[in-house]
Length: 252
Image 1: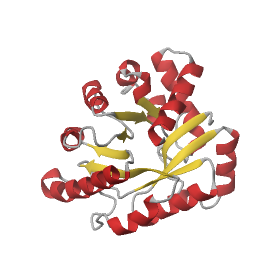
Image 2: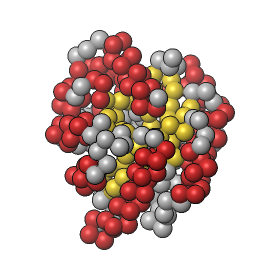
Image 3: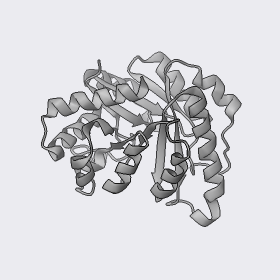
Image 4: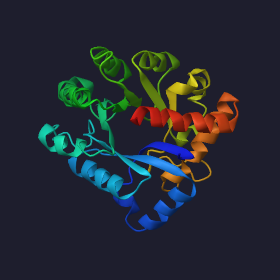
Protein backbone atom coordinates (compact mmCIF):
# COMPACT_ATOMS: atom_id res chain seq x y z
CA UNK A 1 0.00 0.00 0.00
CA UNK A 2 1.52 3.37 -1.01
CA UNK A 3 1.77 6.14 1.56
CA UNK A 4 1.04 8.86 -1.03
CA UNK A 5 -0.45 8.75 -4.51
CA UNK A 6 0.36 11.24 -7.26
CA UNK A 7 -2.33 10.57 -9.83
CA UNK A 8 -0.83 12.72 -12.59
CA UNK A 9 2.85 13.17 -13.45
CA UNK A 10 5.02 13.36 -16.55
CA UNK A 11 8.13 11.41 -15.62
CA UNK A 12 8.26 10.60 -19.34
CA UNK A 13 9.39 14.19 -20.05
CA UNK A 14 13.05 14.97 -20.72
CA UNK A 15 13.25 17.00 -17.50
CA UNK A 16 14.22 13.80 -15.65
CA UNK A 17 16.88 12.40 -17.98
CA UNK A 18 19.89 13.61 -15.99
CA UNK A 19 18.92 12.37 -12.52
CA UNK A 20 16.31 9.68 -13.12
CA UNK A 21 17.67 7.27 -10.50
CA UNK A 22 17.59 9.94 -7.80
CA UNK A 23 14.00 10.89 -8.65
CA UNK A 24 12.92 7.26 -8.40
CA UNK A 25 14.84 6.85 -5.14
CA UNK A 26 13.02 9.84 -3.61
CA UNK A 27 9.71 8.47 -4.86
CA UNK A 28 10.42 5.15 -3.14
CA UNK A 29 11.70 6.70 0.08
CA UNK A 30 8.54 8.78 0.39
CA UNK A 31 6.29 5.78 -0.30
CA UNK A 32 4.77 7.47 -3.34
CA UNK A 33 3.10 5.80 -6.31
CA UNK A 34 2.31 7.76 -9.47
CA UNK A 35 0.45 7.57 -12.77
CA UNK A 36 2.71 8.67 -15.62
CA UNK A 37 0.51 10.33 -18.21
CA UNK A 38 0.94 10.29 -21.96
CA UNK A 39 0.25 13.28 -24.19
CA UNK A 40 0.77 11.47 -27.52
CA UNK A 41 1.60 7.96 -28.69
CA UNK A 42 5.33 8.12 -28.02
CA UNK A 43 5.02 9.54 -24.51
CA UNK A 44 2.22 7.05 -23.80
CA UNK A 45 4.50 4.23 -24.91
CA UNK A 46 7.23 5.56 -22.61
CA UNK A 47 4.74 5.64 -19.73
CA UNK A 48 3.91 1.98 -20.32
CA UNK A 49 7.60 1.06 -20.43
CA UNK A 50 8.16 2.86 -17.11
CA UNK A 51 5.16 1.17 -15.55
CA UNK A 52 6.43 -2.21 -16.66
CA UNK A 53 9.81 -1.59 -15.04
CA UNK A 54 8.81 0.10 -11.77
CA UNK A 55 6.17 -1.23 -9.35
CA UNK A 56 5.43 2.30 -8.11
CA UNK A 57 4.47 3.56 -11.58
CA UNK A 58 1.23 3.13 -13.56
CA UNK A 59 0.50 4.39 -17.08
CA UNK A 60 -2.16 6.55 -18.68
CA UNK A 61 -2.27 6.57 -22.49
CA UNK A 62 -3.79 9.15 -24.79
CA UNK A 63 -3.49 12.36 -26.82
CA UNK A 64 -3.45 15.86 -25.34
CA UNK A 65 -5.99 18.25 -26.93
CA UNK A 66 -3.57 21.01 -28.00
CA UNK A 67 0.06 19.95 -27.55
CA UNK A 68 0.19 19.05 -31.26
CA UNK A 69 -2.92 20.09 -33.24
CA UNK A 70 -1.83 17.82 -36.10
CA UNK A 71 -2.35 14.66 -34.06
CA UNK A 72 -5.37 12.39 -34.23
CA UNK A 73 -6.18 9.45 -31.97
CA UNK A 74 -4.71 6.47 -33.80
CA UNK A 75 -6.84 3.79 -32.20
CA UNK A 76 -4.98 0.81 -33.64
CA UNK A 77 -1.70 1.94 -32.04
CA UNK A 78 -3.30 2.57 -28.68
CA UNK A 79 -5.06 -0.80 -28.81
CA UNK A 80 -1.64 -2.38 -28.34
CA UNK A 81 -0.73 -0.15 -25.41
CA UNK A 82 -4.01 -0.49 -23.52
CA UNK A 83 -3.54 -4.27 -23.30
CA UNK A 84 -0.78 -3.80 -20.74
CA UNK A 85 -2.11 -4.58 -17.23
CA UNK A 86 -0.59 -1.43 -15.74
CA UNK A 87 -2.40 0.92 -18.13
CA UNK A 88 -4.99 2.30 -15.75
CA UNK A 89 -6.55 5.25 -17.63
CA UNK A 90 -7.00 6.97 -20.99
CA UNK A 91 -5.68 10.50 -21.52
CA UNK A 92 -4.80 13.10 -20.88
CA UNK A 93 -7.64 14.11 -23.11
CA UNK A 94 -10.24 16.84 -23.10
CA UNK A 95 -10.60 20.40 -24.35
CA UNK A 96 -8.35 23.45 -24.07
CA UNK A 97 -9.55 26.89 -25.17
CA UNK A 98 -6.82 28.74 -23.30
CA UNK A 99 -4.24 27.94 -25.96
CA UNK A 100 -6.61 27.67 -28.93
CA UNK A 101 -9.64 29.76 -29.89
CA UNK A 102 -12.84 27.80 -29.39
CA UNK A 103 -14.43 29.14 -32.58
CA UNK A 104 -11.54 27.89 -34.68
CA UNK A 105 -10.68 24.61 -32.98
CA UNK A 106 -13.77 23.19 -31.27
CA UNK A 107 -14.70 20.51 -33.79
CA UNK A 108 -11.15 19.11 -34.01
CA UNK A 109 -10.76 18.96 -30.24
CA UNK A 110 -14.24 17.51 -29.76
CA UNK A 111 -13.56 14.65 -32.16
CA UNK A 112 -10.19 13.92 -30.55
CA UNK A 113 -11.88 13.89 -27.14
CA UNK A 114 -14.86 11.74 -28.12
CA UNK A 115 -12.61 9.24 -29.88
CA UNK A 116 -10.80 8.75 -26.57
CA UNK A 117 -14.00 8.63 -24.53
CA UNK A 118 -15.30 5.84 -26.73
CA UNK A 119 -11.95 4.05 -26.47
CA UNK A 120 -12.14 4.30 -22.68
CA UNK A 121 -15.70 2.98 -22.67
CA UNK A 122 -14.70 0.06 -24.89
CA UNK A 123 -11.83 -0.89 -22.61
CA UNK A 124 -13.56 -0.03 -19.33
CA UNK A 125 -10.88 2.48 -18.34
CA UNK A 126 -11.34 5.82 -16.56
CA UNK A 127 -10.51 9.08 -18.30
CA UNK A 128 -7.80 11.54 -17.29
CA UNK A 129 -9.33 14.88 -18.24
CA UNK A 130 -7.40 17.98 -19.32
CA UNK A 131 -9.59 21.08 -19.15
CA UNK A 132 -8.77 24.75 -19.65
CA UNK A 133 -11.49 27.35 -20.20
CA UNK A 134 -13.74 24.44 -21.18
CA UNK A 135 -15.56 22.98 -18.17
CA UNK A 136 -19.04 23.63 -19.55
CA UNK A 137 -18.21 22.09 -22.92
CA UNK A 138 -16.57 19.04 -21.33
CA UNK A 139 -19.51 18.51 -18.98
CA UNK A 140 -21.92 18.66 -21.91
CA UNK A 141 -19.94 16.05 -23.85
CA UNK A 142 -19.50 13.75 -20.84
CA UNK A 143 -23.21 13.96 -20.05
CA UNK A 144 -23.79 12.09 -23.31
CA UNK A 145 -21.82 9.19 -21.83
CA UNK A 146 -23.42 9.33 -18.38
CA UNK A 147 -23.13 5.97 -16.65
CA UNK A 148 -20.71 4.64 -19.26
CA UNK A 149 -17.46 6.31 -18.26
CA UNK A 150 -15.83 7.73 -15.15
CA UNK A 151 -12.52 9.40 -14.42
CA UNK A 152 -10.69 12.38 -12.99
CA UNK A 153 -10.44 16.05 -13.93
CA UNK A 154 -6.78 16.84 -13.39
CA UNK A 155 -5.43 20.21 -12.20
CA UNK A 156 -8.94 21.30 -11.30
CA UNK A 157 -9.36 25.08 -11.30
CA UNK A 158 -13.12 25.45 -11.56
CA UNK A 159 -15.93 26.49 -9.23
CA UNK A 160 -17.66 24.40 -6.59
CA UNK A 161 -20.71 24.21 -8.86
CA UNK A 162 -18.59 22.85 -11.72
CA UNK A 163 -16.94 20.36 -9.38
CA UNK A 164 -20.34 19.15 -8.20
CA UNK A 165 -21.42 18.68 -11.82
CA UNK A 166 -18.42 16.44 -12.38
CA UNK A 167 -19.15 14.51 -9.17
CA UNK A 168 -22.66 13.84 -10.47
CA UNK A 169 -21.09 12.19 -13.53
CA UNK A 170 -18.82 10.01 -11.32
CA UNK A 171 -15.72 12.11 -11.99
CA UNK A 172 -13.30 13.11 -9.25
CA UNK A 173 -11.16 16.27 -9.30
CA UNK A 174 -7.49 16.53 -8.37
CA UNK A 175 -5.32 19.35 -7.07
CA UNK A 176 -1.67 20.26 -7.59
CA UNK A 177 0.98 22.12 -5.64
CA UNK A 178 -0.70 25.39 -6.66
CA UNK A 179 -2.92 24.99 -3.57
CA UNK A 180 0.15 25.53 -1.36
CA UNK A 181 0.58 29.11 -2.55
CA UNK A 182 -2.91 30.32 -3.45
CA UNK A 183 -6.29 30.15 -1.73
CA UNK A 184 -8.25 30.16 -5.00
CA UNK A 185 -9.27 26.51 -4.66
CA UNK A 186 -9.90 26.39 -0.91
CA UNK A 187 -13.70 26.45 -1.15
CA UNK A 188 -13.86 23.46 -3.48
CA UNK A 189 -11.35 21.51 -1.39
CA UNK A 190 -13.19 22.30 1.83
CA UNK A 191 -16.71 21.53 0.60
CA UNK A 192 -16.13 18.61 -1.77
CA UNK A 193 -16.73 15.09 -0.43
CA UNK A 194 -13.33 13.72 0.55
CA UNK A 195 -13.92 10.61 -1.57
CA UNK A 196 -14.21 12.81 -4.69
CA UNK A 197 -10.82 14.58 -4.55
CA UNK A 198 -7.28 13.43 -5.26
CA UNK A 199 -3.69 14.67 -5.07
CA UNK A 200 -1.31 15.18 -7.98
CA UNK A 201 1.87 16.99 -8.95
CA UNK A 202 1.57 17.48 -12.73
CA UNK A 203 5.36 17.15 -12.47
CA UNK A 204 7.59 18.67 -13.76
CA UNK A 205 5.27 21.68 -13.43
CA UNK A 206 3.98 23.75 -10.45
CA UNK A 207 6.14 22.47 -7.60
CA UNK A 208 4.54 23.04 -4.19
CA UNK A 209 5.95 25.10 -1.36
CA UNK A 210 8.72 24.60 -0.15
CA UNK A 211 9.98 23.59 -3.62
CA UNK A 212 8.24 26.36 -5.55
CA UNK A 213 10.24 27.48 -8.59
CA UNK A 214 12.07 24.16 -8.85
CA UNK A 215 11.34 21.20 -11.07
CA UNK A 216 8.49 19.22 -9.56
CA UNK A 217 8.51 15.45 -8.96
CA UNK A 218 6.09 12.84 -7.57
CA UNK A 219 7.70 12.67 -4.09
CA UNK A 220 6.51 16.24 -3.53
CA UNK A 221 2.85 15.18 -3.66
CA UNK A 222 2.96 14.76 0.11
CA UNK A 223 2.94 18.57 0.38
CA UNK A 224 -0.32 18.63 -1.59
CA UNK A 225 -1.86 15.99 0.66
CA UNK A 226 -0.83 17.89 3.78
CA UNK A 227 -2.28 21.13 2.44
CA UNK A 228 -5.60 19.46 1.56
CA UNK A 229 -5.86 18.30 5.18
CA UNK A 230 -5.06 21.80 6.44
CA UNK A 231 -7.67 23.43 4.23
CA UNK A 232 -10.31 20.90 5.28
CA UNK A 233 -9.19 21.11 8.94
CA UNK A 234 -9.17 17.33 9.12
CA UNK A 235 -6.77 14.76 10.50
CA UNK A 236 -3.79 14.63 8.08
CA UNK A 237 -3.56 10.86 8.45
CA UNK A 238 -7.24 10.37 7.62
CA UNK A 239 -6.91 12.61 4.56
CA UNK A 240 -3.66 10.97 3.44
CA UNK A 241 -5.22 7.52 3.61
CA UNK A 242 -8.39 8.68 1.82
CA UNK A 243 -6.42 10.24 -1.04
CA UNK A 244 -4.54 6.97 -1.57
CA UNK A 245 -7.73 4.92 -1.42
CA UNK A 246 -9.45 7.27 -3.88
CA UNK A 247 -6.62 6.75 -6.39
CA UNK A 248 -6.63 2.99 -5.91
CA UNK A 249 -10.39 2.94 -6.40
CA UNK A 250 -10.07 4.85 -9.68
CA UNK A 251 -7.40 2.56 -11.10
CA UNK A 252 -8.95 -0.61 -9.67
